[in-house]
Length: 483
Ligand code: HEM
Ligand SMILES: *[C@@H]1O[C@H](CO)[C@@H](O)[C@H](O)[C@H]1NC(C)=O
Ligand SMILES: *[C@@H]1O[C@H](CO)[C@@H](O)[C@H](O)[C@H]1NC(C)=O
Ligand SMILES: *[C@@H]1O[C@H](CO)[C@@H](O)[C@H](O)[C@H]1NC(C)=O
Image (cartoon, rainbow, N blue to C red):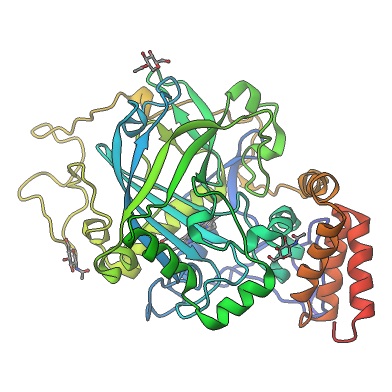
């Protein structure tokens, strides 16, 4: 029997005797596939590197592992509704960011919106329990800015994954509550999820989180209603938003930011960059920014929504990335998927074309390119045709603190009790007695067909949130012969 070549971190579970010897895709031994090569930054953050072959190969392979026979080449975010609209600034936040589209109360920017189910394929029902993808593209005067987030402010994957990534226990607590079953996508919240930076005119930055709140309010289905509608009209949500816009009943969302000073951030701990945690609203209250209103349905769904390409790498000066390696991985993965899914000229397609002028002669030629640059130099730093920028370097470059002893390499962030604190708060302080028992039945329904050892691992994971949950789940499993 071969020995496992990596050790599982505390808090993970080995559920079978099936041991696999892991290698890179060219056969070199691999110590731990769950960890990427990063340069650690404080607060659990880190900078991913282009030298991380495992990360780049895995992301690029993931993007190509389905034949592009339908909307998105991936197994996720295939089914969606989309619409055009506009964003209007309603609050002066110029002291926080020099992003031009966020400066000037009353300023308007066209937007494209896409709201997807995560797990469902193209023909799936809209009303199943799922995290919704929440994508917004702002066509600003300085190029496109995208927020590609979720309707829940945290992330998660599914069972076998979860028991080995207990950090996502918090998102699971939310998904199996009412937030997993919105009754209309006009009434879902939206989150940028990751921590970003807002950069001011003088180059000062603050960390921030983006929040969209529906002006229509937030409401939900009961489990029974959702199931009935999934059978009666699998396209319920997509029809609902389409009809509302067609009737002139335009859905709107307010955009807010939570803002953290760098000095506060240094003391904030793991919740700073970790997208399985949220920032306290008490300590970091929402600051209003503006309002997004959707006012136009797509004329041709394929051309305008299917071919839309959102990416967290689309950022304008005034908003910047942070040392969250998952954000950095996404910044490579989305455009890579889009080059494959839509072709190398995907940026020139109508839903992706910036309204700002584009001059990028270092990307030219290739198949399906509609724009070229004649005799302009295709190399940087030409003396005859020097490139100039409209922005000062200080608005684009900013300080980040690297630990003096940082090691470049496999830097795992160990799971610790901090991963269970926020879900514990939710269970103990937010859920009342009936919500607790309902949540337990919501979650045990999905565990019916799961192998017993994995079910046990799920129970152990939730026991760390609160031993009561473990006991309630055990009672469900024991009292129910088919579980
Ligand atoms: C490292 C982890 C992740 C990777 C590698 C990844 C990768 C991808 C890729 C390649 C696409 C398809 C892009 C396209 O073809 O247009 C996609 C779609 C999407 N992902 Fe992720 N993703 C990750 C995590 C996340 C997270 C954390 C969120 C939410 C915060 C998220 C939200 C979305 C959304 C909303 C879409 C659909 C975009 C659209 O509306 O077109 N993903 N993901
Ligand atoms: C917006 O705020 C900035 C700084 O806080 C201030 O200098 C500016 O005058 C304000 N603009 C308007 C239109 O109120
Ligand atoms: C269980 O699911 C139903 C249907 O979504 C939802 O209304 C309810 O709030 C959930 N219960 C809890 C406590 O999360
Ligand atoms: C390339 O982009 C143009 C829009 O500028 C579009 O008309 C054309 O269909 C695209 N080609 C492909 C193969 O996607």
